[in-house]
Length: 421
Image 1 (tube, rainbow, N blue to C red):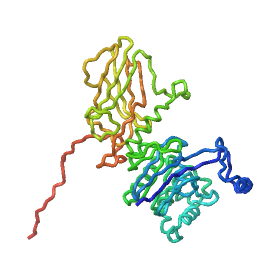
Image 2 (image 1 turned 180 degrees about the horizontal axis):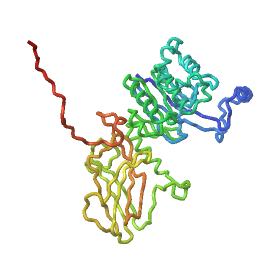
Image 3 (image 1 turned 90 degrees about the horizontal axis):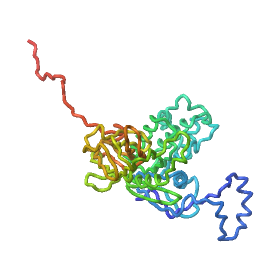
Image 4 (image 1 turned 90 degrees about the vertical axis):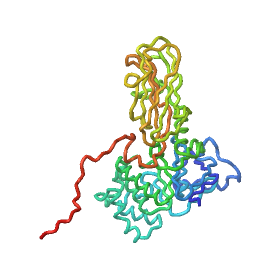
């Protein structure tokens, strides 16, 4: 049964408008006098969503990705009934808890304690129910010292911690979570992700919005990519994330548009060029999603405009945040004796039994001569490693290490029975 139904939903905002009660009442006569069917000036309107439809089944974890302004937060606001659609219909079955905007639902002059009770009442809990959950909320948020302090004195991280704790401990049937978790420290983010894992095991319905593709891959069973208020893709997390990254990279800025101190995605002397990079699976087919431990073949087409000697090809694997995870090159690996190159050709490197855990990854590919980059391309890819069904990735990090266990010594167990005379 569908826990969430989003049927042909469109949402329009009027640019420059304000939502105070006074201004709404002031504009009411002109709105009433507006002729039926008359449209507002399109130049002053923004369609945050345009005829969007989807369903989320009970127990499903849906991720929503997309660039800023794509309509992600608007979708969550419609699901939580913070706002209503301009057209279409939304339906959510069961109690809904939402963590959409930092401090949403908190009164700044009330203390943390008072806001917990206020939010619990808004979500339909009785005082006895809030009493029973209160200690758990405060303990999870780690705000014991500050619970009787007005929340207007809280930092953004404290807001996020209390907001998530309230949302999580109201025992929702549907949990809506926006990117606000990113303001918390890394340890609290991990606590939140583990709490979401608990909800998954209890077949709760979750809609999770994030720019962190690692979290999206790890949490979600399905992903929707929004852009310009419309659905661009809906399906398997690995495939949708890969398509999204490729679209974003096609819009990447040129070197002349970089901010001061920012490293360009591509640079080099230009004496040799990387013409194309192909990422292939172990069957030699172009691939975007791989299993943990699968061989990955990388083919590099090059064009050398002069004789390059000595030549070195280098490949570095990064995560979606640019962290370098490891790499290979000619000088540290076995290769077919290519010491110089001129003209065009292709080289190939096979990453054997790739030791990456689930997530989205990119390549940095470089042609070098005596340590000087002739052509360096970053953000090549992406490719996705599917979730390891046997291990939780947050327990082990990015790399899957191989180890051999043996027992060096063990306590001896004397099963004999000694009887005294």
